[in-house]
Image 1: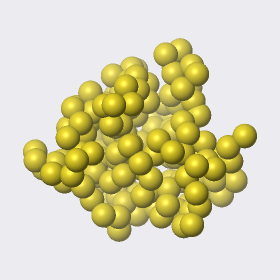
Image 2 (image 1 turned 45 degrees about the horizontal axis):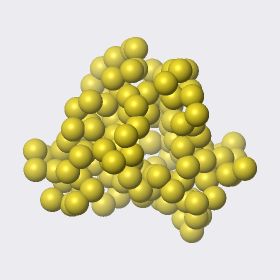
Image 3 (image 1 turned 180 degrees about the vertical axis):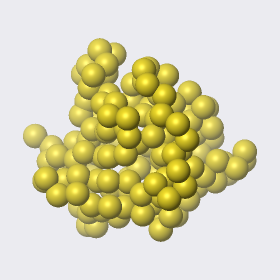
Length: 147
């Protein structure tokens, strides 16, 4: 098992505990695509083209950093700030316990995981990020240049 993947099972099982709406199972075709928006331009990322990490329980996920690098090859993650939007419209900024945590620095994206079956966003346990940043049914990664 990949060393970063150990906390993934727990993270994916606890994903979005602060998200008030519960989207249904993401359909298989949609689950393979994620929109990355940067400078008002949308980039469609086919998640099935990225190298998956597989956990012991069969959970497959891709690194969030790989998703962004696929959309913006050659862009330094250190120059980016990030926010997220779920397929049901959920925005982590709408939750008070995410105050001060957004935008997420691009350097942290290498510790974020997107489940290939559900598009649930999870983070490495060591970051200790609250449930509002564990987004169910992630649909869009919003990028901006770091200020």
